[in-house]
Length: 288
Image (cartoon, rainbow, N blue to C red; front, side, top):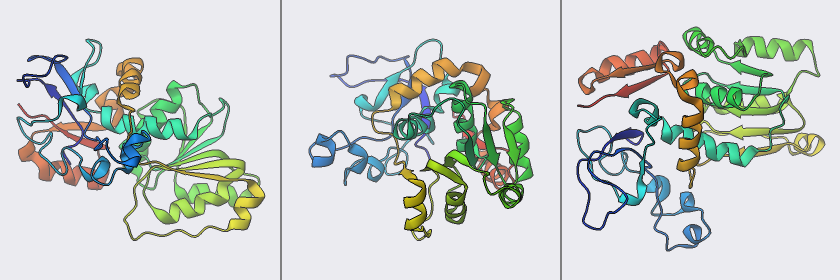
């Protein structure tokens, strides 16, 4: 849980030349061994001993402590225009950036559906709005999360899954060019296939449990020429995420707009309860 973090450099090793004490930084928690076939192909997220199998903050000490030690090649210096608060979102935005690269091009004017209005759904909505997309619908069952999504002031259509089904029942032509699942809920992913237009794309971004399954009708894929994309972490996309953050600024990355609340570590029970009820979209811990 401590793999998304920013901070200030306290000390560096003797061979480090691009960083110094006092630098404000964000940490990319993922890396590869750079010896295997996957790493040599530039796909370290498939590395058997790297990627998600060696994430800082999961498999080694990360951001849930006053100090942590990380490899210098995973540390990115922040420009003056990016705050530490904004930089704490670099890791999730770098995963969004990887997903963006996979599903592009996305023509402006496309009809887009986001499934889930947690923090990842909010970040996807922010990026889509930044890129000029306006015909976006967000489906979210929790009322509290729907209210948080409205705080982004994108003008997107925010509805419940029940309303989504009702619209499809009333209009058989109702559908989307792109669906981005941010729920990690396999039944929602399966049902969304019926909502794709011809040539549509489904981006599976939310992470399910390893045991979750969904059924697919190959004939439906054939008739519509549907494409399903899956997204696995953030290979080499940290610099792109920092570029996004610089462009998004406080318009999109204000904690209040995104539904983010800052806690101390000894408030972790309060933070987790707020996440469960949907009164916040994300908890971030500030450690002095």
